[in-house]
Image (cartoon, rainbow, N blue to C red; front, side, top):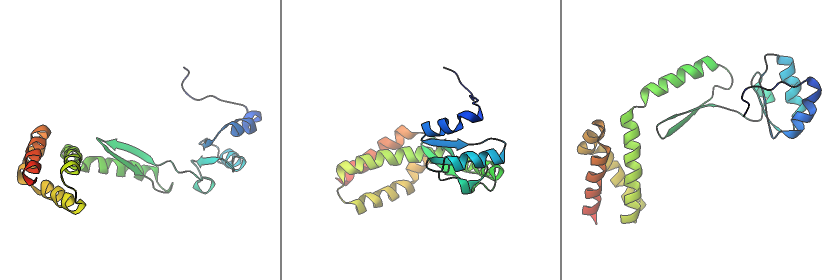
Length: 157
């Protein structure tokens, strides 16, 4: 499989656009970007140099554990998008990700044992604030936290 950019002559432009569902226009030539974007007006278009020529936005998207974050600055500052991404990545901790994993497990168990959504929500809040759960998660002991919470759920039935 070939990887990388494939270059075509300008003569092939109309035929290439016709074959595409999504046209990403990202050359270093602003006038060419405009020309391609306007020719592709009936397609999904992302023009990196001029958002007004786009009808599809491609945000910076990244994962931290099971959390997906998308960030977009309306094409105003790719540099700030990068800096904000670094800030966000530094704020979300492994403990946060473990809490998400625990909450997924708790929700699964609660749906099997507790019929009231309000009661499930209240229990989820209780689990999040439980000092033993917090200590176990902060120590990275997700399996122990799951066992502890499972016992709590079994007691409410």
